[in-house]
Amino acid sequence: RNGSLRRFVEMDAFADFPVHVIHVVVDLEVAYMRMLARMKGSREAAIRAGPVLEKRAFMARANELHPRAFPELETLDHLLIDTTETPIEACVDAALNYVMR
Image (cartoon, rainbow, N blue to C red):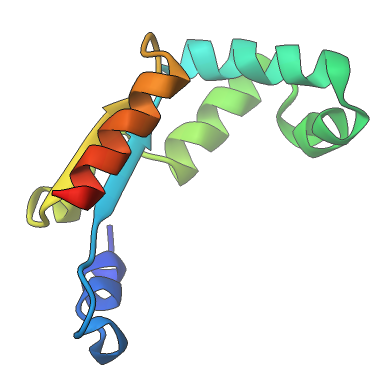
């Protein structure tokens, strides 16, 4: 959102390498349900989720830290992967195809 992604992609250190930007998104309702499911099987996941366990707090934090879209991204060649309903295998295939093109 502040131009840091473009500055990162255009760093001299990456000049000799292909750069691929993959933006992964998920519906926030689905993300919240996935978090709750992870917490049932993992004490560590429950500890990490502590501050955002309440749904309203989770939604506010996710919207703030992980915008679904932002203007800077539109100016870069990138792949958008929505994991809301897409199986993880298909997401991985899409990412690998993008990187290998």
